[in-house]
Length: 369
Image 1 (cartoon, rainbow, N blue to C red):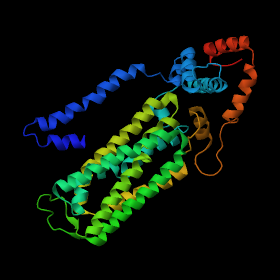
Image 2: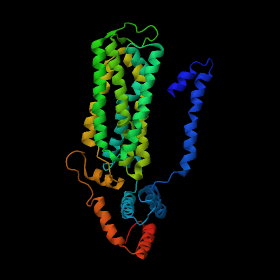
Image 3: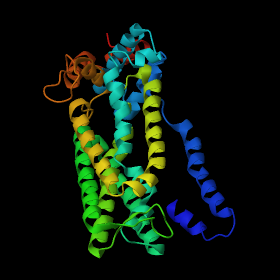
Image 4: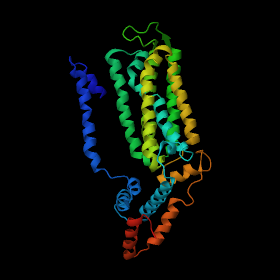
């Protein structure tokens, strides 16, 4: 969209902004067409007592549509146990969202979005042209060099999506926080030591009241900006959205995830309005603030963000129910998933007739006799 908007800026009519807006409808239409073909969540189907559909969807996702697969049967059992427990809670109100048993995971889901925003990525991407003006660039050169960060953002998101299921969530988020803090503190330090004040701001941009005049410092700022975006794209970029959905129980998910997303956009909104006056009044210190937020995110993740890699939502429920902190020895389910799978394999046996009877029972009740 950056390049499209740049290209349409040469159109001498209101089409210059209408065209980019209109083109954004294309992905929305594609999404609208594709959504009906997406499988329903097996946990949602189970919560609606549609066990046969839940088992079929789970089998298609986990075992090439083999409904007798031991891992599939084990997971459907865990889902059934959790659904029964949630029915006993009997409440999906906002009070339940903030209840003692849910408050830790809800606050973590909210802060996953807050830290993703207050890492500074959107503020720095929205106003990258301002930043590069502070680095001494101007005109077409500024616009061209600024556009490269969007390419980096797309490219570096791809490996994150490809390997997301193989990477420990905590390690990814903590590593991302530390690296982003390094790039932010480095940029702030370079600007502070190699820049100078511009009283009243630049002639064509009064917001810019601090400029770096050294060519080497300018290149270093550009490099740090690119490295910052690359780091965010493969760490907090996807994790900020993935992690909340992996920890919130089904019966309050719609409210809790909506609340977390609300904080995402509130933070985004605040950064949009905060950034120009911050550049004008506190200049390079703004980078130091974001760097401090990244350090705070590292500490917060270390203490409260439980590891979700390789764990089902049902296992995460047990972990959050039994642990407040995320470091040290974590108390999990009474039996791990692999042990339950072995027990199910023993029950299923090897006879085809038994398998059919047992699968029928699973589809009707959500459990194996």
